[in-house]
Length: 468
Image (tube, rainbow, N blue to C red; front, side):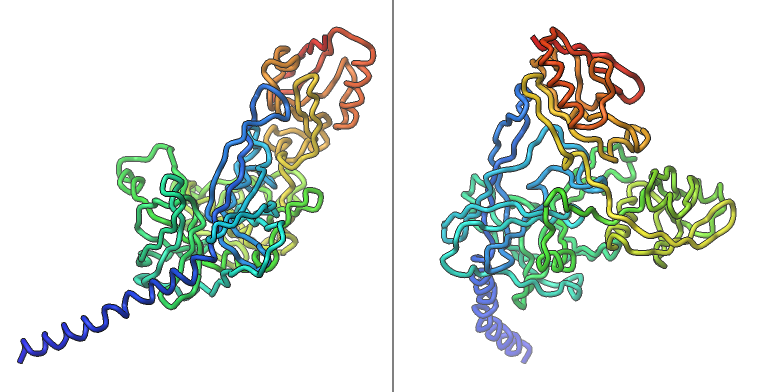
């Protein structure tokens, strides 16, 4: 009897087997036309002539998200920082990326332009500029809120160049769901794909997320954490991260760019040692170690040594500096102009404090610039990220040295990137326009050298530039 029952089960599975494979083939055929190959040039500063760059060809996975040719790609295609909390700071070695092209599954290639990006969710957007013969098949993302641990999924990606960018379609299982501060999914997998931006598809045929780029942390870790450091997980951003951005993509327009929500503090984690020393009522929190001038925090009266215990009624359970990004994400999840309530611990007592968040000031990478090829220098207007970093008053005047050609008159004279030019031949520099006018007047006087007074972080330097 038992043998007959096993035989029946075997026959049922044998009949079902072709049907089990069919859905995955159908899913691949449905979604393959909806991803594309993005190619562009990363412009790396040549360091030999201002405004000249080495062009390095790059490739990324793109997802078509609208029939008119809107493509979503990972934000690393645009390495410049947009505001003082986004990106990795000033990108002295890179210019703006150029020559974007989108190659569809049918091998047709179209020129595209960069529209904008959101570094916090690792999403950037391109738009095909060439006329399209017909609307493109595109991904209409479903909600990823119901994705659970153990759920079978598929990843649709592109392989690297040595495999001719062929599609890679792989079944996986969701291994973990990280709920805070921004929900994301983890898959325990080796990553052989071309780039981040691969498409996560459920067995029911719904696109619900994209893969994130991985980052390596080379900081020292104690032996107890060594094994954890070496584990590799593929991180997935569920569609809730970017669905609203697809409807209203961020626009780069430099003059109109609005940064993410910003509080304006320096911070460290409330470690167990600090908690025991101050006897705080909560085990975790954010210790304010700097309040930036003219920031929302300063306007609200926050002080150094304040401990933030809750943010807009959410507990701030942060005990390690490695987790500070969780608090930053809590801030940037709000809209600029939003009012939030903080619970602060100050001098042994808790208190409530309302704060109105501002948009983060734009970064030096988006600042107005002047390139003086005859001197071999590019200078930019002073932005708040530089003034904060150098601990200078916000009304500081001058221009920021963004690039210097090593073999140019400025480079040979000793001018270095990162300095602030405050005087030209003894005359105070107010801004970019006054600096350009001073250099022009100096050249018209047919001098042999121009003297620049440069403010470095902790010292003043005098640099002679041989204009002959």
